[in-house]
Length: 299
Image (spheres, rainbow, N blue to C red):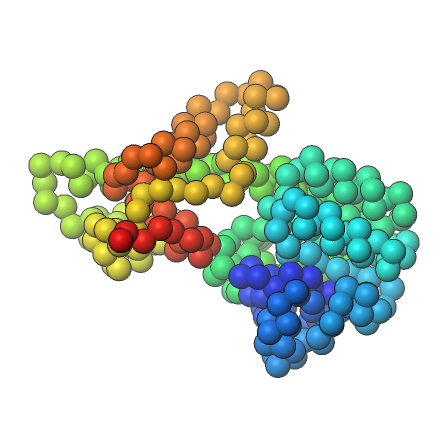
């Protein structure tokens, strides 16, 4: 299948590399020319502009965006729209707000262009070797996209969520749940560290990662983080957030749904920026392990 990929950051580059290895044909574009050149060396077709990218794709075109949420998505769409035809499809695979996705779908739909909101999970490892993707939009456009989804995702790791906005809404809630899970893990390891017992936290995490009720990828990432430093002392506990947890709490208020655990985990991130303990360092380490998110190194 032939598609365009716009945005070759950490996630977009890995996804493009994965698709090339699966035998798909890609035309790629990014403001950073070296990233385009790197993928061209791996078999992609390099485009020097969005206009050139659109011109290299046969109708109906499929263009996947992996650009930062917000204005960059809107600017890219506005530049692409005059280059597209009825029946073409644009996929937003970034962490956009679901209401923005609803608006964009309506805007593109006026010109007969399909818009799919694809919430992408799995971090850098998933992008490279098998992701989890939740898609909203027109079902016919989703069906046409499915060969790429099958290549990008682990088995049973993708699905059609419903009308426009539902893919990014599902990803938003997913990230809210992720906030709560990581916060609970951080607090638990903090309690182990504060106890009267001389716990080897790496050993505890290794045992919990195998067969326990709380085993899973996050626990495996905790093992990796603790192997680097058993006290995670190389980083500060200031935890950033990319917006999805706050959006989840806002949506819960709008829909009058109680989500106290997710809300508390969001507020704990705010608190972490003025206080510090092992639980904050654990969450900061987990964010770095799965997504390559930046952390603050202690001076």
